[in-house]
Length: 196
Image (cartoon, rainbow, N blue to C red; front, side):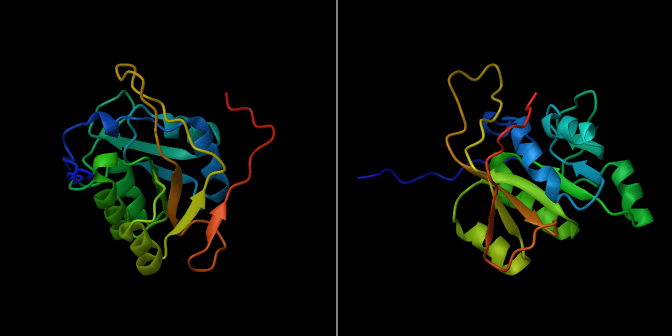
């Protein structure tokens, strides 16, 4: 008999190891062609792995996180106001997107907050057919971009022998993807992309 699965802790202001895996470069390269704006708020920036790739490709990126790295504004995404530069974009009516790898422990809350902002967003999430993901697609017009292979997330150096043991998707809303409801966009393998 299988053990009953216990609910995971959801602590937006307390870091958990499963929230610290960084996004690999190839995942960011996959989403770039679909981004509808040149301004991006990376709202769970961590060590900046998404932001660095976006900046290399000409995007203006504002980073925030509950951890202060040299480039991050301190911001608890679920309860704080956006960082001052993002507030300026909002006041001026400038279009921006939220692109991030949300903390795994609060990914549902993070997704709902992105929907609340009502701006384009792309969140890299575990690929599953949970009721929550189905609701995002049916109720909120979100769309899925499905990678051609599993991403190998960047594991913190102090975590031994751990990899992302799941496939991921980009859950998007208001992105440049021409799909009918319930369709998925499947990425094709890139033959010759320099991932360095």
